[in-house]
Image 1: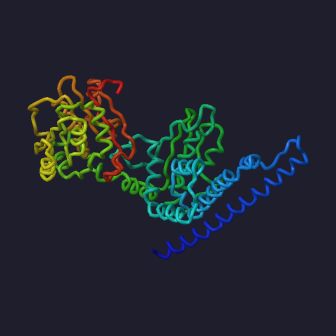
Image 2: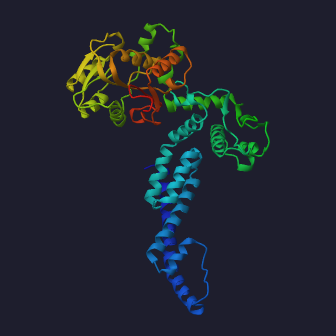
Image 3: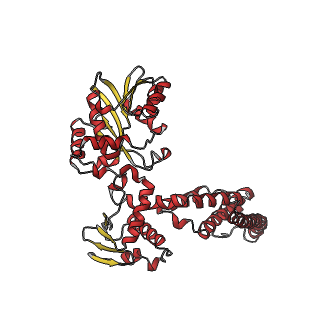
Length: 448
C-alpha cells in the first residue's frame, strides 16, 4: 500500500466514524422526538401539528424507528459521497452523462458510505481517471458529428456544428448546454486551469444572449449563433485541439483507422490486401456473436458460412444454435486452432476464392482496415443463396462516408432491401478496442 493509499484510508476511516456517530445521534433524537410528539398531541389533541419539513419526520407519527434510522442513514451517505467525490475532484473528470448516472444512483440507492466502500471507489476512480476523462471527451464530441461514431473519423478540426442549439422558444437547448460545458471542461483541464465558475464560463456568456444571430468569444472558443437555431463553434487553441485528438485516438484506437484515407475507391488491390494482412485481430464478443446468429435466424441443420472466422467465436455461436459452420480464415495459426475445435475450415484469402456452393445463412465480422469490410461483404453476397440471409459487422463509417465506394455499397444494400443498424457503443470493448460498429443485414427485409 502506498503512502497515498494510507492517507486516503485514514481519511476515509475518520469520515466513517463521523458518519456512524451522526446516524447514532439521529437514532437517539428519534426517541426524544417521538416522546415530544406524544406530549404535543396531549396539549393539542385536535390541532394541526406541523413538525419538521423533512419527509422523514412523518415516520415519527408511526413510531417507526427502524425506517427512520435507515432513511437518515441514506441521507447521510449521500452527503458523504458528495463530499468525498468533490473533495477528491473526481467529478471534474466525468462528462455530464456519467455525472447524471452517478447522481441517479445516489438518489435511488446510495451505497453505504463506509471507509472500505469509499476507499475502494475513490481508488478505482483514480486508477481509471484517464479512461474516464478520455471517455468524457469521446462522449462530448460523438454527439456533435456522426463521424465520431467511427474509428476512421475520430479527429476534430477547427470547427463543429451545434445543431438545434436553441429551442423553438428561443432559449439555449439544455442538452447542448451540457455538451458545451463538457467541451469547456475538457479544454480547461488540458490547459491546466480549473473549471470556471458558472458566471464566468463560456456557456454563460452564450446563455446571456436572448436574440439571434450573435457571436461570442472566450479563451478557447468562438461561437456564432444563427436564426435557424444552429450554432458553429470554432476552436481557437490549436495546441489544445491537438491534445484532444491524441486522446481521442488513444480512446478509439488509432491503428484501426489509420489507413482508410489511403484506401479510396481507386486504391490498388495489392496495397489494400497488404494492409489487411497486418490488421490487428479483435475477436467478436460472445454476446454479440450470439446476437448476430439470432438475427440471422440460424436453425438446426443450417449450413452457415463464416468467411472471417478468426478464433471461432461466431462459429461456436452457430453451433450452439444447432447450425453447421463452414469457416474460412486467412491466418495459418488460427486455421489450425479452428480445425482443433473440429470446425470445418478452409485456409486462405476469402477474396481470392470463387463460390463453390451457396449458403442459406452467412454471419461475418470482416476486417475493417482500409475499408476492407466493404470488399468482404460485397464478395460474401456472391456466396448467398437466393432468399438467404447475410448479417455482417461493419465499420460505423459505412453509414455516413461519402467516398465513391461507400456510397455505391449503400446503394447496393438499399437495392437488396437491406438495412444498416448501429450496434451499441463499446460493443468491442472487451476485445481491446472502443471502435463503434454497425450491423448490416440482407434478407431480413426493411423492417429489421
